[in-house]
Image (cartoon, rainbow, N blue to C red; front, side, top):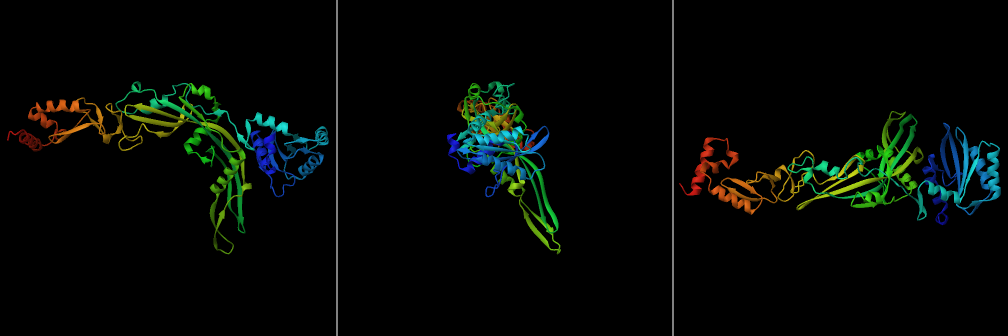
Length: 454
């Protein structure tokens, strides 16, 4: 346990808090470090429906003798808990024979406060069992479970095909295969209880009794709470995880990246407690005995917040890019099998004005590959098909601007237009079709003037 040997006593307690929480113990917390009275970590377990307190003594030393075990036994007896209690001594080193004999005797005599001993070798086996790795003097979360990066009942490109479904003038069968990559992003799902009562001379003025569950990105740096819809995606699919096998997923995606969890569970816990303190802090207005109105800021203490669980899992972030002639369309989303939350939709976005969203109609321009909004899509005069304003060749004929795929089409229409009878030329100004007779006559006169006839 060379890495554990490099820790300070307080750091060792942090590590053990991580270990116990991963082992499934509840209400895991550290006693006051300034006066722990022999109790470094306190936690609870439920056995056969009965809740039991466990008082843990952490000894970051080479050898632990019988006096340490005896002292803990006395501390258990005085610990205030309405129910059965037991103890545990954990060390990075080893226990002397008298220490083990004393603990064994408590077990054999059915003592109401038995004590379990865990040495350095036991800790290594436990760390391997629960998927933790000793890393830079701390225990880093290691996780091999991920939400599904795609729906196994559908093609991996199904999400992109669905996104293109309501784009006008292009069929799914005409789409090239997109380039796909997946990044497995570490997240933690935190469940915590906050119970606090605030009183003044007039009695209780505010009470908090709340269970909170939220999800946070857990990469290196400050954790960040995910958006609500992403958090729901994670929590609703925690029961349906699969093994994170990068080799297997490499056969489905072009690129696969797995990121590391950046902190220990204790660090995530501390961050969660601070966040919940801030979240629950509020100012309460009340009237005192003297009929004077007061404002009091009610902030829960750290001891009022109990982190029940920190569940690590990988959240797949899938990015697929589709190349259509001159343009590239990204589509990025968080995935959990058939469920997903879109992070970036570059398909429903006009390439000319960045208009985006599902309320607009978007049309594909076969001339250049652009997807454009209704303001930037016109009808090509000769082909009768969509063309975007970004690539179209334009020219005014009488009073109306016409749009063409290329110079060749423009030249063909010039010849066609020159051979048109005057009434057909007038009809090229569609905004006048069905209009007043006077307006139509004015156009005809204008064309006669242009033609040199009058």
